[in-house]
Length: 385
Image (tube, rainbow, N blue to C red; front, side):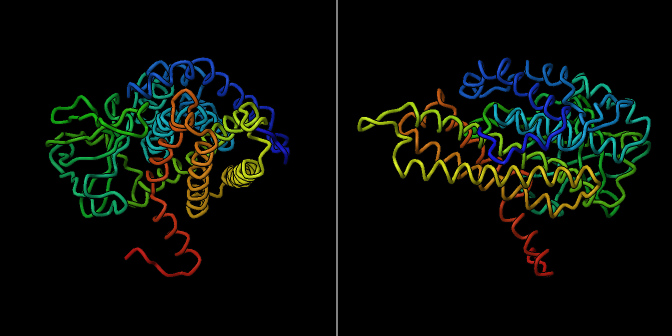
């Protein structure tokens, strides 16, 4: 995509290198197979080793725990380039990084950090994150999964729904009601009473693996509790803030892919003896798509710089996630329209991105929820109750 505002000049050499390496990896290792993966509804497992080899797992964590010590702008660029390929790629990395490695790093003991994080960075351990339930999505405080204290540990009962990486996970970061609060636990997916049913028949995020977790009196040793998570649900939501930040960048990656495809198509496709790009209505669509892309990328970059300065305000991330998902969906739909009948085929990728973005628009905080977060910030009135 054309860089009219010269945003690339705002990136350091390291940030540009990370961006380019991820883009090249996706183009070389994933794109030749992504159509088959999406149509066949399977996750391209070979991607995992490529992501680990590039240091994308735990990218912002210190090197002592297997991380790369990179900044949040770099992580955003990683998410952008991964989702330019497919939302399922970014989802995998987002879950491993933001929802699983981050809480162990932030809330775990030193023993937990040294035990799990280096192996997770190498993809020797794959993790999933369990907060949403069949009857508790936008209102996670109403969860019914409970952990009861028993001798030497805890006994976990309940279920979690829409869990990315669930069917391939070795461990799960599970949030459950315990002792009149909500606690985080590291759960072994091979533990007795733990099961995962893969969710099938999806029309979106087909190249991603999703499951429903069930816990039938699963025993969790005391040393598997995230003892640093003392604020209950607020700590679980802190993990979601990490992931939502990456989603804002990722959605723009998918949108950029759709824009580039539409622009190339309209310049090559001729109707009425001239390229589609020569028609006023087509140029109007392209100009609008491009404008929203540039605006969103400016916002994402600025928020990334704020996070690198230590400003982790979740309201800012809600602003970015809401904006990016809204505009990315509009861009994908406009691109599909510009491609006419070809827009619905997997060969042109646009419909795949559009379908994926329907899920991205909803998960990790629906558009309505982020709207109310912003509304509460602006008015001081809580409209959730």
